[in-house]
Length: 230
Image 1 (cartoon, one colour):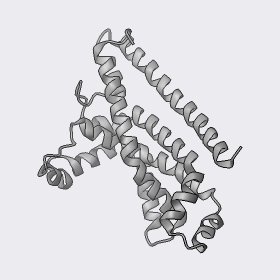
Image 2 (tube, rainbow, N blue to C red; image 1 turned 30 degrees about the vertical axis):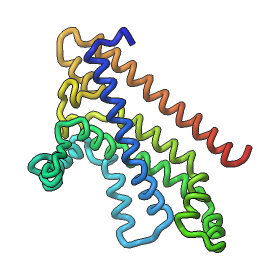
Image 3 (cartoon, rainbow, N blue to C red; image 1 turned 90 degrees about the vertical axis):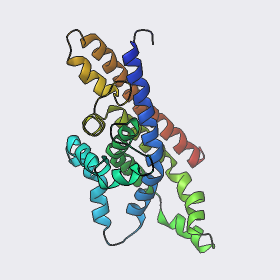
């Protein structure tokens, strides 16, 4: 990518790093929450469902400000983590946290729909044969919902790549540290002569987003056919 300058390349590298970590770290929790919402009935289920989807409803800046209040140096969790030398505010790890939270609803939604499409009788059949709940999930449910997991992960990655409002509010826009692709586009548009660099990053963003969506569809279909044995 010789047509990208050093600052643009750094923003791209940081965005990929943030998005990959945001997706990988949130995926196990996303599977658990999706399964709980799809299969379990418990007090507070609707509250959990509302909290999961809250980032989609709230303005991203509000989400970023809430993260700053919670994980900032003066916040309750921020002070606690700082005692162990862990600081996320104004760090790339904070950008990954903000991106993961904003992408989490899309991931959970895709996985939950996949779980709900699985016939519960298949899981019950495994349980009646004496298999544990975890064994049934690993051998019956997980292979069947794999297309949804892959689709949810890829969509979450694409969403994390494009996250701006919550990220810039929580970790600011520090070149080389927290400046992701959207933040870099914003910065270039604020200076005279920055439009060409901003346009190049916009093109990269569109390519990454379209690739992620096409890959999600392709991998989902391939895995679905493999699971179906066709």
